[in-house]
Image (tube, rainbow, N blue to C red; front, side, top):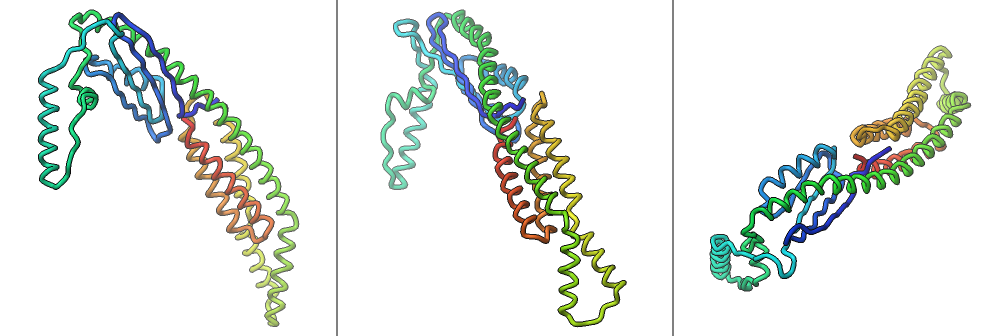
Length: 293
């Protein structure tokens, strides 16, 4: 069953004097890109989080965020004087440079200062910090499990869409094969009619040779056979238990290559129309495949 690269999961809880909430979101990406946002005082938690996620997720652009705050009325909020001084100094320098350029910068508000890590939730009791990290570490596998479940649910929807697309393509290829019946006779008739319009005598042997060359150049049997083989490969990927997004993406390129050749060699309105329908279907499938892990 396919797994999508799109998913979301969140958890929240409390530990000691802390309230916490963590969230994991994912969208499609060529590789695996994990970005984390965690409080600075949880030293090492971002690295361990990346390691756990990467052990279970193969592809996607993932954003993990963790928010921690003191429960109302509990704990003490401490200010890091050095960091606060650094933030205010930078603000003054920026304001001066802006003024030199003729720009007026609005003063920083308290909430803006707090958002710059000038305020840090630090409890004197480091045991409480260790406890909340322990709780978060234990809860992380459940968060990832929820995230994976949401990606699998999305993957099931992708599976249905792609399976339906492949059925439509099989029908189109069957129609394309049907147009090949009598195609040789049609080519011969049109070729002889064109020669007759020249009103010139042509050696029958040379005429037969040219007709044979034309028949070989316009033969699309090989393209149809390869398209059928690609469909079988895609159906196999639909039931694969391992991430198959990259293989699906490559297969879409091969589908498109054969469809282009089919259209260029068609030589008939009916076959060209079928080839164009196949190309439209391939484009639709390619959009869905971009989200497959």
